Picture 1 (spheres, rainbow, N blue to C red):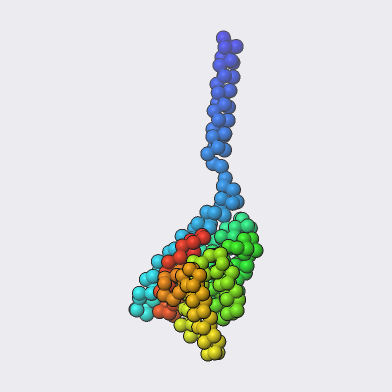
Picture 2: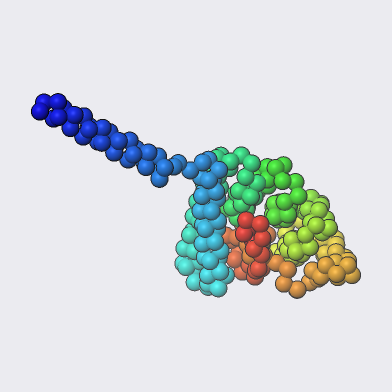
Length: 246
């Protein structure tokens, strides 16, 4: 009798241990930790969602005339971009080769008016992926914001042969730069106006078709940080390439 009871106790113990082992294995299978690359992608996507939220607020800002509401919206937009910077920084720390995240990081920095940080992010994106058109175009935007016209022109030429759409977007940014009344000598502005006309003519002759007013443009591509002077350069709309920035 004692042997039977002992055998029964051992069997029960074995079954309990087996159950615990199975439960432990089940936890390991179902609670698999995300890889650094997966976590980077999660942060990247969250940053994109914040950028999209900023775009929606910018649309409201463009149509707003109440000074108090304008101030509130500008603060809200800045908050979205600041949080987008945090998310993209997390993405790039987890995945140092995430060129799309670096490009989107540069975009958020540029919208906050931090051109130095934006250029650094764009440079990193292009060091990882030299022909990435989104970063080339965005960097050209940053150059325009700093009145570094020759470098912005080089960005346009780099895009012209490979991505006509992005080239057209950057040419629209040149037009917005001229219309914004940049703090440069008048003869320089005149020279840029002539260059824009020449490039638009050449594009039309070669079938690339980004002549003036044809809609080649991208939301958020206004020269400047997008948080001031919302009545200037804010009518650009339409890009959704690469990581979705525009």
